[in-house]
Image 1 (cartoon, rainbow, N blue to C red):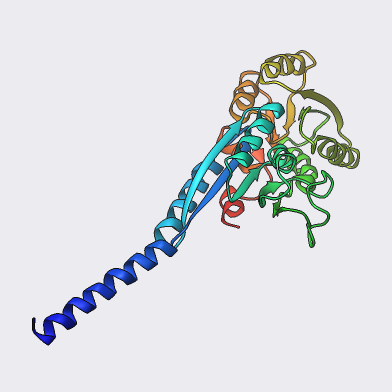
Image 2: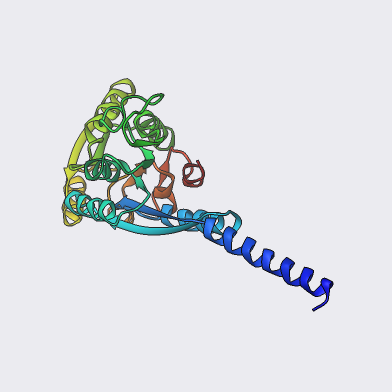
Length: 265
């Protein structure tokens, strides 16, 4: 064998060894995504983001999605399943899912996404120093609740009586209602609060509002979006919610951050 041939074989061997080493170093990160009600458009945005990151980086992301529809027990069960899998990190949204994930594990990192009032609901100690295993982004729902009523007034001219459709099982609900009540006092509006805990209660809630002659409703973001919008259209009610996805589903107006910005952060 000539010296040149031996050099070529050695070079090929080194290349193969280098490729094997690089391949071994590329690790797969297991991500569990936990959502409560209204998984879209966040699921599609997250799928796209993780797919792009896997293609362009040295890390491959294996993503598992779990979604519950207005059932706190179900989302808690899903959180426990993800923790037992186990995954390397849990992405949770909105507040009920983040709370369920926090109950399921004290060791797996949890990245909350657009969660309302994480301090008030006990998810973090403070925004600057969250502590524990939870970090991420907070939503502006508590601040934008008042702006939602102002938006309704600007569009409708006057408010008079306004119905609030709230989620009985959402830890954020007391804050959501308090913020709206404070805004209503300033704007001179009268609030009528209806809380529900199951999707089957939606139709009855809208029928009650219709029988009372209500024309405006503010909807909490953790309620089933599409079903709520369809009932609002059926009863010809102006429906508002502090989430941009509500309008994309057919609601009248919203005041909120963009889902794309929340996912990107």
